[in-house]
Length: 229
Image (spheres, one colour):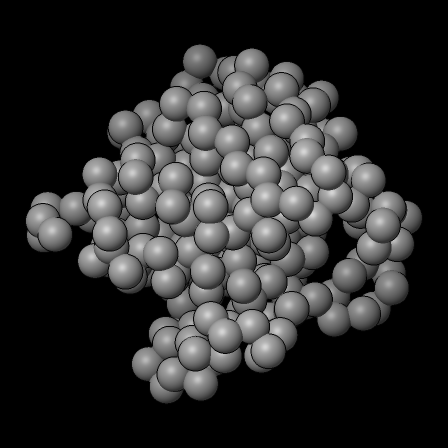
C-alpha cells in the first residue's frame, strides 16, 4: 500500500443522552469497528476525532459481535478512543476522507457543529471523500458548499429511515427525523427495507442506512480512496 494515501478520519459524537428521555447514547460501536476493520485490512491509515475530543460516549456495546469484541478488548484501540482529537482542531488537507459514524448521539451534536460543516466542506472541495452511516448523515444536513448549495442536494443518499426510527420508538425523542430532513435539503433518499444493508455512492459521497450497512460503507470508502485489500 502506498504511503502517499492520507488517513481516513473517523468522527464520533460527543453527545451522551437521548434528549429529554435522559437515556444514555453515543456513537454506535459497530459503526466504527466494522469500517475500521475494512480500512485496516486494506492497509489504510486511520485517525479518530469527536466533536469535543477526548473519550466519546459509546452505544451499541454488543460484544457478541466478533469485530466489536476484538477491538473493544484491544488496548491500543481503547487508548486511541480515549484520546480522540476535537474535530475543530484537525487540518482537512491532512485527510483523504472524513467518515461520520452513527449512534443516536449524532442527532444532537453533528447537525449544528461549525467544525462538522467547515471540515466536511474543505475535504469535499479538496477532492476528498465524505462518508456517513446510520445516524451519521446527521452531519450532512447543514453542510453547504462554497456556492451556498447543500452538499446533499440532488445526490442519492442513504440514512436511518423514518420507519426505522419509528421501529425503535424514538420518533418523539430525536430532535428531527433524519431521512425527512435530508429530503428537505434536496437529497434523493434511497431507502431499503428496515435493517437491511443499503450503501449508496454518489460521486465521492458514500452513505449507509443502518448498522447493517457499516461494512459496506467501509468498503466503498476504501475503494474511493484508492485502496484494495
